[in-house]
Image (tube, rainbow, N blue to C red; front, side, top):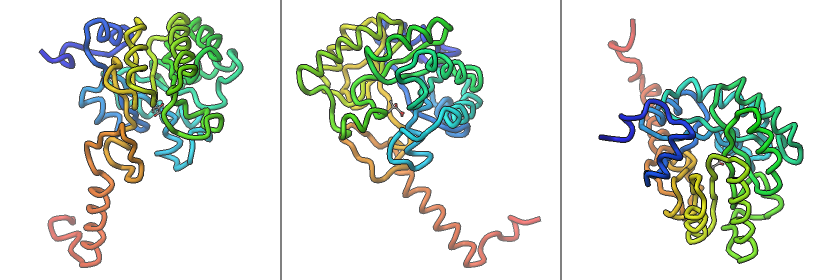
Length: 271
Ligand code: KIV
């Protein structure tokens, strides 16, 4: 029997059961009702309302400009389209860093105003206090280590992280700390596969990788990337399942041609 048929609603506990049972976790981003409905109906386990909305929905160069209000708008749209997946929402840049009280306030706003099921935050030791404070309100927290795009101006580039021993050891320490602090899962972004595998074996909670190889407990991609809506973004880790940019462009070209040629609407397409 398929996993999807057995489960009514994915919870953080289901994800732990998946890890314990050796079942891989499938996660994708969504930012709006219609896409969330399609993705949810296809049997995805987790939908991430990522702050990548700043890039793919709003056209910003980084994830930094998106606001808490905008994240709540995206998240509430997604929640209305989902009946099975766990919906996790990124706390955006500026809504939690360096202030655990602000972090709790922001997390409460997301849960209350969007109806989502969990929040995600970037960072290790520096967010420990915030993770613990948010958990006191009963809000599940997903961690995010490795390439953390909200710190892009600290890193300077989007290249693979933790290739050197010192940074790899810090990442392992941070992963254990996030687990001890109560995170229910951790995203590992763009780190060497052997490191992601070692972290995944070491931790009890699930890891979800993006550009981190096949040894993590699950995988996540940005939906716009895997559907080929972004043509320019071609990192090695990305598998494209569609070429939607060309498909949509082709359809729109045809529509324009049909109108110009007075072919649309025809007699059957009018009242
Ligand atoms: O914002 C996002 O889409 C993310 C994923 C890349 C993990 O954080």
